[in-house]
Length: 436
Image (cartoon, rainbow, N blue to C red; front, side, top):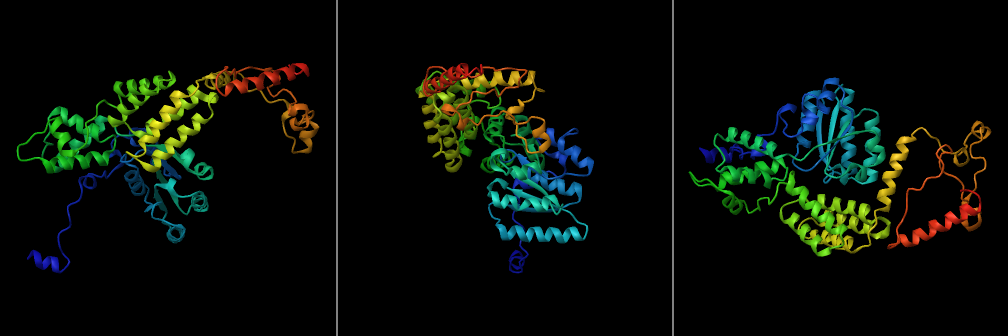
């Protein structure tokens, strides 16, 4: 009989993956995103208002971005149209937009979900602007990359960015409980192995359920795995430390202080420890960029370039090939001259800006695009530095009520030694010309 069904194209559907079977059917069933879908969550409020507006979902893989977009369409009676930037070209977009216009003509709105939206180039991203503005589509884009860097400012100005968080251990354990209820059997793990399995998911809900399936498939009747047995069957290292707790912060602190202390060997050791423990490499890349700005600054302007290049190289190569770029950046930063002068100056400037937030610039340095503004003295007395001796006018750029302030004081180290000479020279010219 089964052969007859197969011949007629009526064979039984293949088993659905556990992650698909456990896909939430309601927003409140989504795990780990209470700040978005909880009782007071941002998305809960938007749904209640009856108007979503265009959105950008930013967060790591497996945190529910696609699922939430699909559920939003159901909550708002919008037609759900999913596309991926990886497989969609300009011609495909035009067809999607035309179909959305056709639905709008019949009174049906469209929620256009664009996965990996950051993979569209700038021109492709601009194509969304007209259909967002005229209401043809409600755009929901999903990205694992920082939207500030990867998406057009024009697109971002028309969309609200909502951040999805990596799942915490308790969230993953909740998923395991749901999986056990669906399967009708417990995971064959002891208590420690259960925690270890949750850590192996690295905050990815989909990955956690895939790992659970691997465990069930591997267990013999009555077999219970401990942590060592778990590592053996899934061929993945159990986390050496909890990335959300003290171990995570202790090791990143050790890495940061080793670089600040100009010890490349210690920096490499702590970097290796974190990567070996399963730390997210792009988290490490971001921290290296921060170290370049905070601890090296303009003592070596190339430090930030190298750190950013390492981030891009890892993003391009992935693990394990891209890890060498992070190691190269760590060594470069550790061996670079150190300065926190820009970091200190920025904090001082922020404090002063908050204290004098209502102060306005001197009229001499403001443009006067209208006749009235010219009559009011805007731009009067401005001196174009390129026309001044030494290409330096020395005029005042601070609010008159504030007076000149000194925030940035470069040390006699690295490239800042040359910057200090320039600043001292300009201060001398300013004093000579009576500009204070």
